[in-house]
Length: 583
Image (cartoon, rainbow, N blue to C red; front, side):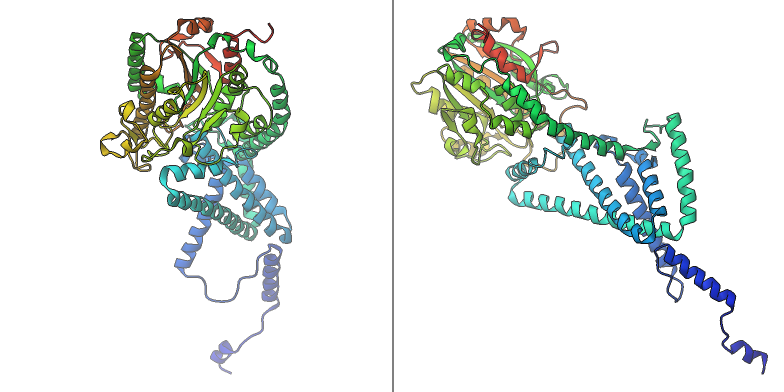
């Protein structure tokens, strides 16, 4: 036989080859991966694609772990940290038996996806409310957010936004889970090398933690933020569960619960008292150099006009329980004298029999009125507040155009209240009126019109009365948004001053205040939760009653004006205008 023939003859595998093959198969089986199928080696393009997918999977997992939950902390430095949770997860996956490794990896990916969604929710809430998302109490706000989007941008845009948010959540859960599974297969194929890398990184993490090594931005290299975040949200849940008992005790302690009506509010007998909430009117509106000039000009000029007409005013600050939204929490806090900073407390308040400021006026003989122009759906809370008469958007019967979120301009709201209530012969009134022209997104507002021309609001259809803001809710930069916000506040404050000058009289007492600061897109970082509050009256005896408060003269509180928590106002007001509960 020729040498060529011998080369072509098939030969049996040698014992060494068989052993090598068996060892390779066994190793693959022990790692939980199938032995590679016979065939040509992968092409260069396929190898590059595989490497890119693996790199993207690693980047997605690392980003899910180390990305902060506040937008202003997001940056390149975040991915340079070493997350302790990743080291623990990799070590666990390396020591698990093959049958357990894949389901544990899938569960880890799902949990990491949920953590990513939670971080996105926190980011949104920090921008809108200056606080993290509350996993126990905030779910009901999504319905309010959808209603806000519908009112501001239209139902179609709101539905598209909601669907997009839902797809984003599902996509994150799926992609992060697939990324963890892919990396787990890679770890299983390279167990020894992976173990060495994890050990080295663990030593490095420990050294950085012990010596406090930080990046140039001040971010610690040894990261465990994911664990800290989960622990903080778990603490939210524990606090929320305990808070119901705490709140019940606070609500039960009421010095004015049993005070008879003839001993309440004696210093306001015969007066019409209007409590007007100005949407998003916060301390920054009168102090931020970028917002305040126009607002303070309206207030100072308004005060000069009021003084010339015989009125006077005193102003201070209240600390709101909410920021950037949740107006109903501020309304309930001021009127009930309880700190209502979440929806659970709000629900419990409505289920009880707390004496509100409205209720005290009613007990003392006033007719109580609720004027809520933004109430476009049934509002069962009106029963709790006990209004003698209640006007929602339907009863206010506005026939003009919408201006952004607001169903009707504030001038129409006040003019209609005047026509339906104060212009008629009436017993003394106490009215609560939330004004909403300054509600986000601060796009378009009307020009003021003569009060006797307001009518049914159809005058606001005329192009000549449209001014301020951009009708495009989305495509505005931050400077334009801030300018539109300031303009809307000027409009509402100017409208209030004009109302007093036109319809006030000797027997009007106006209390107007902000419900909360504007969202973080408008206010400076670290903005307080303070809102201005002002009392306006023509009768000097009214303001003499509050002389002890130390509030400043005028419609604009200065930097040194007193600051009270909003829940203290009810008792201070009742004490100032009537005998205290103990006498």
